[in-house]
Length: 244
Length: 244
DNA sequence: TCAAAAGTGTTTCAGATACACCCATGT
DNA sequence: ACATGGGTGTATCTGAAACACTTTTGA
Image (cartoon, rainbow over the protein chains, first blue to last red):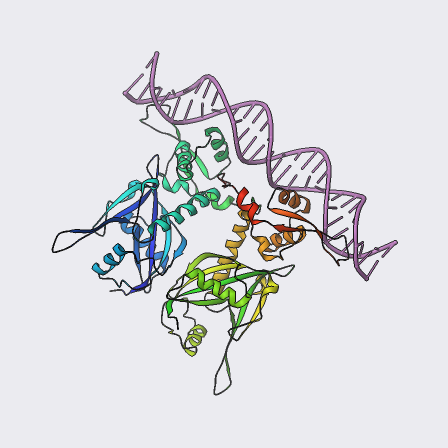
């Protein structure tokens, strides 16, 4: 059995998109007293993971993703590390650590990763716990410092999509321009003009229009597009202008 | 005495500007065999630090900066965490850890911070070791994974200055527009057009023109400017447009 | 035939780029 | 007087923003 690095963990913020809202994958955390049957803890967390001694943190994060989605080519990026001495010191968190056989006093550094996945690819069970997609705006209180981690991940995502084409990771392989626009709108929480949006993406050579249309929709069917990483890598240029 | 967190460290990439090059603060690492007098190690590192058990990583990073500069209001930002299992496993690094009384087998996570300082504010000695500013392009091989850390810090800096006005942190409080332009050129390694640069900064209301000029220069003296954080905070706006 | 979303063009304005000369100072 | 860097304006082009109607499909 592999040895676990006891002071390092990774937390993964999995973002998904349900057609109208930006969602995040949340896991239920419940703890019931064995004797009395009393519910001691009933709240929620992000998906986290320990790290093995001989494993990189990236591999540890990919392990969570693989367990949740069965996919191994998912967008994943480190965004910030959380190491506050008191980050695991709330009463519920201490109780949880003790009851699940962890060292409750240890200072654990967690490296935050965020990930973009098509929501339908996720199983609804993980390590025996319930897993749910929840719109980011309805998440409420999370355990540990997971609200902080989620907020930082969201800020990173909002910024990153301004400069890098990663939004299609939230969509099926073939998608419409309206879906793509909706993703930007969901992440930024604003509305964009359809015509201007389309003029903008028309300049993005790595969005390839297919000879294919939606089917089974009760309106004019939209054209389908795919993202071409190949074209993107060949045409992307460094941006040396500055805006602020 | 405070207890040290044995598995967490911070590494600080201090960037400076000498009037023509972007520089980074580098510390000599020398180890001499006590009996033979033979030089066992003679190379260079970034400035790093341990973290105390009850201390945040930000505070630990500020401690390095304070020791080096005597300043406590320096620009500092976390940019990436380095945790590869083999990051301290090179022979010289193992030798160094053992001879300086550290646990050579332990996996140590280091959180990378970068910082922008006016170079003249730095003392030239730190923990009994020689400290030097070296142009980023001339750094050469560093100990541990410090070349990797430096490269990531530089990439972060190059990107960050596109969107946030932090470059003046590398200059004296009062600076000329040419100095400011030179900083951008040094960080990006490209040349910018003087007139276009000035038109651009003219739109930045937080650059305040003083009723003051350079003195003692053998040419038309330049006007001096200061950065106003106050104006910046009041006028900065969220950027929701996207460019890629 | 109606409901629903797809798809399209023009005008106006702001900012990006390219480019060359005179000015103020110290030596 | 000369060397040095400071400081300025215009023309062109590209992209951002604002804005409304026709088209195609399934029900």
